[in-house]
Image 1: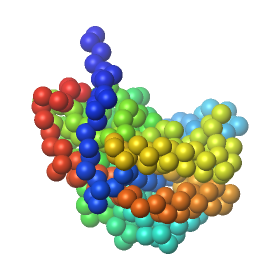
Image 2: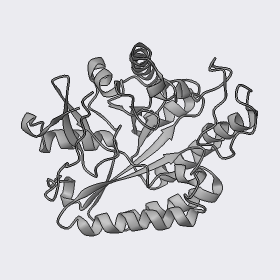
Image 3: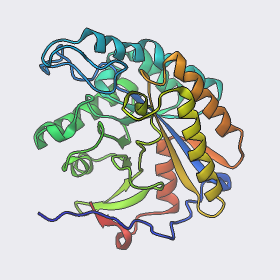
Length: 307
């Protein structure tokens, strides 16, 4: 087996992204919409979801966990609308990593996303681990996700992102499906980059696991909203300072059921206000970054690794 990894990237001379208006930093906020598509007894999985929830499940594996289901329901019933209000009040564009089945089960939320002008990056047909799917199962999940979101929102998704990471087949299957501008199944850079997949150009717009509210429910992560604020400010300040000579991209990962809680949403509001208090900042959607990169840094086969 040949293992292909790019451990070099852009090295000491990353390209000037030429962000609009001479921005020193591009800030991209992702809201993950997963509630209603997670593992569940009701959907035939044979077990209940046990990850990225406010309270870890206490029932035996294979038993319906009503507590965790309820925690997830908070995200779609309450957290989503609180966060949508915060973004609307500040006129901030975001990207929604949307699981198709989850949005199907809350069409009012899907309509609100479209009305706000946010782009939906497909987060899969369901919020399941793609590395556990066979190649044929994964191909079908990708197809279902595209068709579902197209029917629900009136347009197909242009981005792709798996739950916590792709399988060895994901990127190839995304390119095979066609119609995507990019995927975000990478955490290895602060700028987009091109790869060659099955002989075709493909853009990667990296995501983040460090500035991510999932750390509120993981050991050693954020204990309070103040922890989130401090880390977000430190991230922004460093990238903003570096942006004088090497502008980069800053991703913020959010979840309805986590940052949407009253005790944390105020921390997010403080971060948003802090960022908006600076000039030369481009707050944008992930689709905007992908399209910008395609124009200003088009694919060059000599500089793109096979992936």
